[in-house]
Length: 307
Picture (cartoon, rainbow, N blue to C red):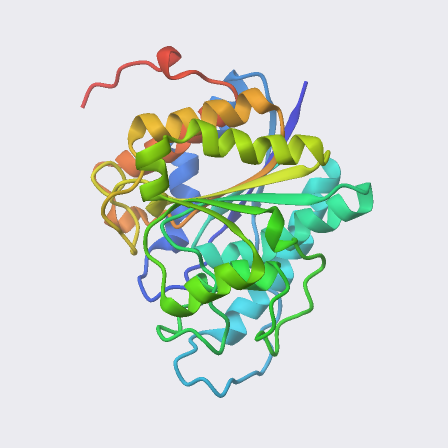
């Protein structure tokens, strides 16, 4: 039986919108552990991460918010992610704002490095999250994890990542809100980006399969990071950074089913769920259903809900 460990990361320090701290609890209430068990996984809920001791730090960019807290979370989550990747088949990280990925991805990448395999990342998000401490204007550090885990400069005070991910091994899908500084950065470091126009023109199957073929050919390990705002806000309102024109219900489930069929996924983030902004828990349930599709459930096996 395949083993799965679930870790809550109740951080909202990376965003100015309160509520993400309740994300892990909402996933559990939506029944994620039980659903995965019913799919044949041996599931262990290892509780919630707690931050390390916050350092005394400052930064010349006056916009930067909660730097000490984000560093503390990054240190703690990196350690926990590495431990989980070393002791189970599939770690799942429940957020919490997307700054959590500054810890989860270096942690699992460290385990990949030990195994002699390259780490790949599929980033499902409306945003590239490629700012550094110097380029962010909002100061919200959930907009910085990709730059951090790909080893970009501009993170004074942060721990050196336990392991970094080659930017060429990162594929972004669903992107539709990118600052000018991030656009220049994407072009400079060679990251693969399939924005919503590409998906509208080509669909999701060909772009996704081209990336999965690269992972398979390299014998890589694949981390999937799914942000609520990847989805259209009409079906997933529970996020503080809604951007119109996101993935549809069926597109999102198709991605998850293709990922399951590939057999390549080795770890998963479910990020930016803010239950305070939800409508009758529909976003928590949808994100839970998407995780279930990734782990083997087909949409046609889904029971109709009565509201």
